[in-house]
Amino acid sequence: MPTVTVYESAETVPTVDSADELGVRRVSSLFPALADGPGDQVALRFGERSLTYGELAAAAGTLAGRLRGARRVAVWATPELETAVAVTGVLLAGAAAVPLNPKSGEKELAHIVSDSAPTLVLTAPGTQLPAGLGDLARLDVDASATGPAAGAAEVPDTDPALIVYTSGTTGPPKGAVLPRRALATTLDALADAWQWTADDVLVHGLPLFHVHGLVLGTLGPLRRGGSVRHLGRFSTEGVARELTRGATMLFGVPTMYHRIAEALPEDPELAAALGRARLLVSGSAALPVHDHERIAAATGRRVIERYGMTETLMNTSVRADGEARPGTVGVPLPGVELRLVEEDGTEIGAYDGESVGEIQVRGANLFTEYLNRPDATAAAHTADGWFRTGDMAVREPDGYVRIVGRKATDLIKSGGYKIGAGEIENALLEHPGVREAAVTGEPDADLGERIVAWVVPADPQSPPTAEELADHVARRLAPHKRPRVVHHLAALPRNDMGKIMKRALVADA
Ligand code: MCA
Ligand code: AMP
Image (cartoon, rainbow, N blue to C red; front, side, top):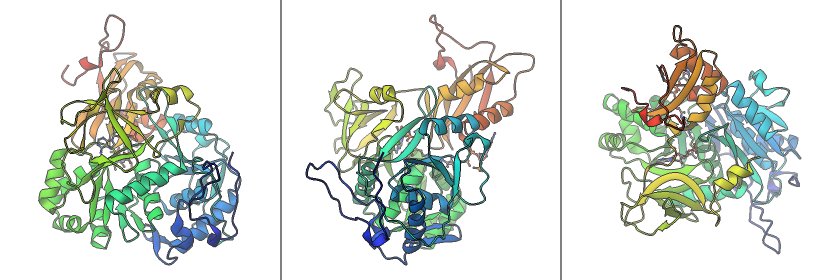
């Protein structure tokens, strides 16, 4: 449990790295601009509502004062101003924030809350919270609070900052514990790669319960002393409006860029707005080359890709001053060690654009553990401390990384969300109309992959409908985990060992 030192005012927040004589207890401020930045500059804007750095320091500082001594605090992560204030307040208090997807179903929510055991949940005033949160205490965030503000608690950089839940191939989601230094390291590495400064104004419509929208899209601008404009929900109109009104950078998942590419032929304003941007960045899944080229042809701008993971934050990126080569995720970021290894653990030395190996990484950008899961933490690392990403890639002669696939076929990326097939299969099996179930991912032009369920009904005469099963999964887990297609089968294809042969499950089978 961290010792929480609360400062009297924002002026006393430590802004410079310090270490004790052993160099162990490093303390640094995650958000120097909150203490000594231009107080009247806009930090956050969500729709019509905004906060300057001065207002954010007061609101988040007031909240931090109330969170004194807390260890973990859940945040009901709606795409609203209060979510950004809540996470900033938790970090100023020296505690760890556990962002919750407000569309989480009852089973998923119950798991996350019991696993992370937060002291309370922070939410926007007026929000109706589901019964699934049990008797967890609630604290409404006042985004216009004016103090008395507590400054940043003095806690080591190795202390947890965020616990972000991420799906695996089987079982419930695991909580990746991200230390404060990982946030600082990754955001500073991106600043270097993207020439990201306080002058940048970022626009996006990403959810705030994952790394992309929360760490890169919200804490990123705050660490730089710049601004973020959140769209509430993604739309091509919102992107065009904000880029026309001075936003300089756009972050999105490939599904968003696909929707932009589809809209461009009919929307010259969108094309002109994108043409004005300093940087268009895609991540969370592979950006199809076709969408990349369509956007380049219509706007004269090339989208750059960066590659990361909840557990590692960002590993590689195309640099702002580098070549935005379609289909590649650029070069390792400063401070990230990256290697490719063969199945037997042999390192691949070649930069030949051909030799495929698993990406393994090391660096200060990494998580420290999966909460309460030492087994999973150990399994995810090699004996010499490299993290196994499960992503397969080649390296080109100039060091550019090209991701070519994933080790686990049971991990599906849909709309930029990672979804474990096993989790959905378990939820389907809890439906009384389902006797057996298998889940696969199929290519989808919009979502990258769509979730497909293969179901043996309990009663073949009256099988559950696709809508019924989609609703069942959406209610128990989350809407983005619902199957988009359901096939009914008399039996699942199994091998001699009784294992389901997923390769035999293809749409025309
Ligand atoms: C439809 N809906 C339902 C149902 N059917 N709700 C409940 N039950 C049902 N049966 C609702 C949905 O909740 C949603 O509501 C609406 O209908 C449309 O749903 P859908 O088609 O699923 O989504 P979409 O609105 O088309 O969203 C596409 C999207 C989204 C905007 C691209 O997928 C998205 O935001 N993706 C971002 C994922 C992300 O940030 N990943 C980062 C993790 P409503 O409209 O009200 O919402 S990866 C990461 O962090 C790493 C580090 C990295 O590298 O970045
Ligand atoms: P998540 O676990 O949700 O953080 O998702 C991490 C995974 O997203 C990585 O392991 C990759 O498979 C994938 N990913 C992220 N960025 C990219 C990218 N630019 N290109 C291809 N895959 C990506």
